[in-house]
Length: 370
Ligand code: SF4
Ligand code: SF4
Image 1 (tube, rainbow, N blue to C red):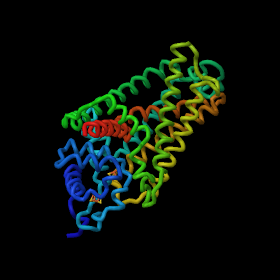
Image 2 (cartoon, rainbow, N blue to C red):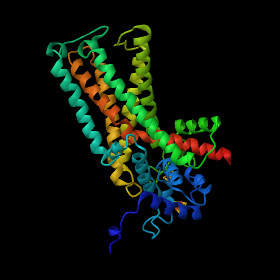
Image 3 (cartoon, rainbow, N blue to C red):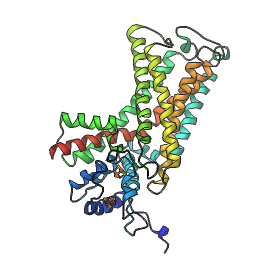
Image 4 (spheres, rainbow, N blue to C red):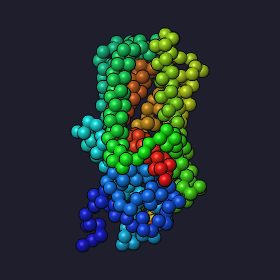
């Protein structure tokens, strides 16, 4: 029988096999938080393995140094096994459960959602609005809302966004119960702060101090840098929307705001970060060493990065051309991508942020407990 004919083991079984080997070897214990967490255990429950998989940042460091990596008969490939188990956990804890299948062929799902979001917003705009209004140039206070009424934007987008957040919270609670909750990990305020700090700094993509071996065997901070652009770019865009909401409802100041106003500055800087970060991560992904990757999961990563890039690009183009006759069409295109992003949020790679944060809080808790 050919090697490639071997059946693929279940993700949790393969992770259990590899952690048992690694716990005897322990060569990689200084690489990241996973190996010290592994060493705190002699046996691995499904909750332990799910936690370790979500603690892994996929830096590939342990694969490149491993003396038991393929073609060795042990076939140790920790990043690949953990990435399969991570995605399996995203589906296992998804809410509502019947939408868990969105994690299969996730790239296709996100592409379809983008098409549906665009078709919906553009179709409604062109079906319900006067073409003279859509293709007219509008300036001054409330110009966006002359094309798409404020209520028509706020209610559907607000409801979809709140449902997405609720789904992510339910998923996070389910994850915590199955991992840290099942292990009865003591939780403290200091551990929560420690986990948040490790998340914000991406400490575990620092390797032993010289960065991680991604996209190849050379040590580099490229992945951490582009991830920071993406994460902080996203947070600045979120802050821009929040400030805009306060301006609208708190002060009665109606968008669009001046180019040097706080929401526009936050949104512009964040938007540029959301172009650089996803573009850089995509470029690294195109060059990445294939063996430590679960190739079938590549679509999930690429789809989210492309969607984030398009949300940002269409937002910045809209900002630049908001006083021209293209504004109506650009507004619909931008909102179409935003709608797709909101719907996809709990069923995309974005959920890794929730599970990684919780895994880092569990890690900080365990380290404090000793
Ligand atoms: S990945 Fe390989 S080298 Fe590292 S601890 Fe596991 S078996 Fe040892
Ligand atoms: S891939 Fe990186 S983060 Fe994951 S277990 Fe290996 S060294 Fe740790």
